Length: 474
Image (cartoon, rainbow, N blue to C red; front, side, top):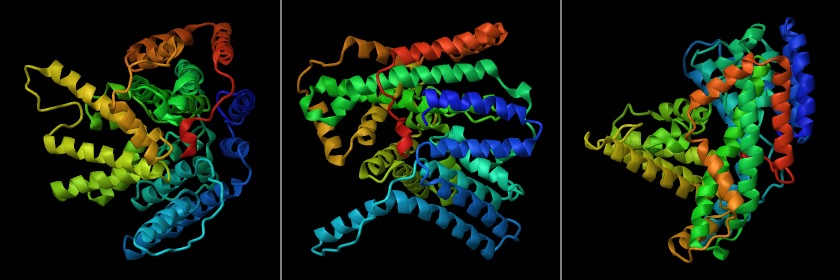
């Protein structure tokens, strides 16, 4: 079930009033939201509803198995059993065939011919995000940031809650379970904020991302050899805007929908293409993933505690695994490793966050140069992320630097849409705060008419069909 569809509008129009009608009976409300989330997930496929339930059940039981124990080898051993169990599910569905193919190719190059069987199994939607939420719960229990939950329903809801289930944002167990412990306060609903996020998300997905994708990016990346260097350059910029508008749209809608149901999700994007270093970019892009990798992978690896060499190693490993998390492809691994190497280079040069060692009399020039370099590094690495194979990535970049022609097939309409996408990076946030305040003060008729009119217009203007959000594949 996609957010920008009639099916979801009908679904949410039922879920919203029933949720608040049950608010005083908190347990009943949570049971209802679990059932609604399973309906939402089952709309895609009922085949893996059992997997969703078993994952929640297993992690609930396992947290109680090791959580109350005293610190020691046994407690740590049981934690690792839980981590490996979750990762084994992810590995089976997402990575088994990739690793088998890699091993067979490697041994074949050495003169050995192994015949390891592949498995034919569909990738369960949201299996990566499901795994991240489950691991967050187990690890936080182990670190005693929260006790094992006494409520099985709470864990069912945490793992399956439909706004974040498919593509995030990644919500920490402690933050979410603290909210499920009591009834929701209607006064916590930020109506203007939620409506602005949902309308803005629909516009970014239905208009900007979809038109950029269907009218230009898909064709350019499908066969880069048929396009000029200018088209390839514009295609690289266009995809950068497409993936931002597509992914941030999903999480904006998810945050808005969750808020309307009485739950608060963390921010996931903060105008990432304004970043002036790659470290700054990762503080603005998919913030919940960046912080998850930092807290659950980089710091346990040792972080920056054991000298510069180990720190650089930990950065590269973290980003490489972050790339692999996105998909079973060398393209994603290369994408992650390139970011890890660049982050390591910034650290060695003393370039961190939004600060540089540039001469103080040239602060603006250094910021502009930092932005230009960072933006183009991010755009070039997106080529590996978007291309279907490593060979096509190389072909794309080869055509880009070949300076083969300066004509373009991009239509004026797509250029206009790209300009709208670029505006999302420079519009001051206080403008939206003003609009939210104005909306909150509007009469009830306007509160209903404004989102209804926006949805109608977006539906009329959007291209035919509704392609899934990019991050659904992860």
